[in-house]
Every structure is written in C-alpha cells, then in structure tokens.
Image 1: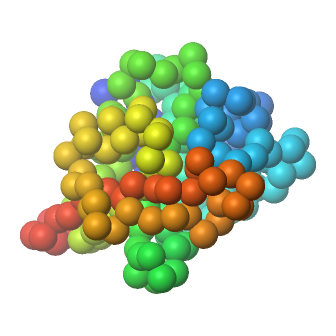
Image 2: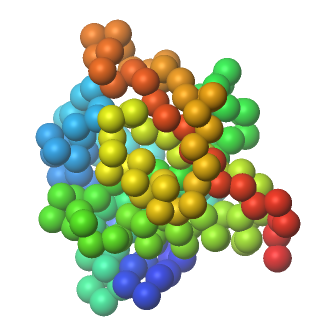
Length: 184
C-alpha cells in the first residue's frame, strides 16, 4: 500500500524485507540518541508488526520511507495519534521520522514530511499536525523549521514517558502545522 510519493521517495506500508532496516534504525546508538532506550530484537519485531497492522487497518502510522527508484526502505516517516493526554488533545496527530544514518543529510526527512503534511491537511482534512522532539535534538528541530511548522514555546513539555533516570531527555519542544482552509 502506497500512501504518498515524492520525486525521490515512496511512503508505504512495511514489508517483510524491511525488517532488517527496522531493526537497524531502532537499535542504532546515533539514531536513538534522544531516546532513553534501544529496542531489543523481540521488541523491534512487535513494534514492526503492530505498526504494519495499524497502517493496514487505519491508514495511520509510521510508514516505510523508501527510495522511489529501488523501493529499498531507508527509515520511516508517518502520521499517527500522538497519545499525550493532558499535553495534546486526544485526537491530536503527530508527524515523526527516523532514518538510518547513511541517509542523513540528504533532505529525505524534510521531503517526506513535507509531502505527508500536505497529505494530512489536504487529503485527510487534518487541521493541526504536531511534531515534538527532545529540546537538544537539533536535527529534528531543523526539519520542523524547514517544514514551516510553528514552535509553540509556551507549550513545550516534559515527556511523561521518559523516565526520571534520563532527565536530559525529558524536556520536549512542541511544533504545530496548521491548515485553516480544510480539505480540498
């Protein structure tokens, strides 16, 4: 199932042959620098299956981000329920991305996320889409800014799922993309 395409990329559901890349990005020290954990092989399998099933059932999730020419997965970019009650509305949608390090610095995250924002706003009728990251995650924050998302400084927050054993990872910045004209 293809969700959207760009000049260089395809965003689609995960396939069995993408599992090794999924392991790689969820276990890599550099990729997971701003997360308090690395996932085990078993945890990666569960998350892979759950995400693939959610995309098939709802159309939302963190889609495989693949090279348009080869269809080889490079990471993910997606739209999903944020799941941050008390911080965001229950129905809030977040956009997020994660790429294998060999694909960093080539504009893939920005290209994929820009297309997904357009898809979310114009095709799916999402009036607001949020993004958040650890306050020191300058790479992700730069993507949010390149996308034209607005930093909601007065709504930055301590992430409730980050354990107190990792205080440097608790503070998150919150960005929002708004589309006031609705569906086309």
